[in-house]
Image (cartoon, rainbow, N blue to C red; front, side, top):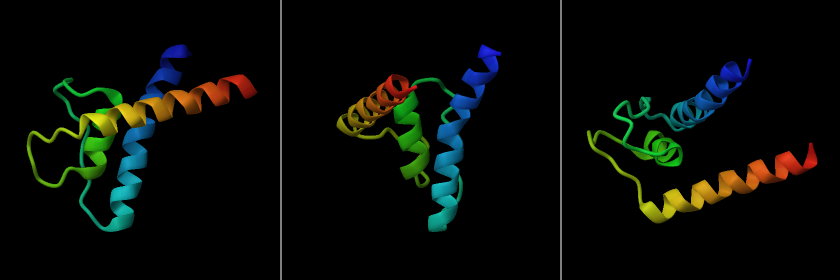
Length: 80
């Protein structure tokens, strides 16, 4: 059961990025399969990448989104 929860949470970023890209009329981006990007960097890459094969998002933006995700998780865990 925990494995299913982890798999669903792993797909949330892909679904969110795909919804955003469809909304603004851009083609979809697939997640980075090389494993070189972190979760947040991969999410930002799916949002912003146009046609570059080796796109890497800004490191300060990646850290900011990472801290934002941690704060959201912390708020959700404390209210549950």
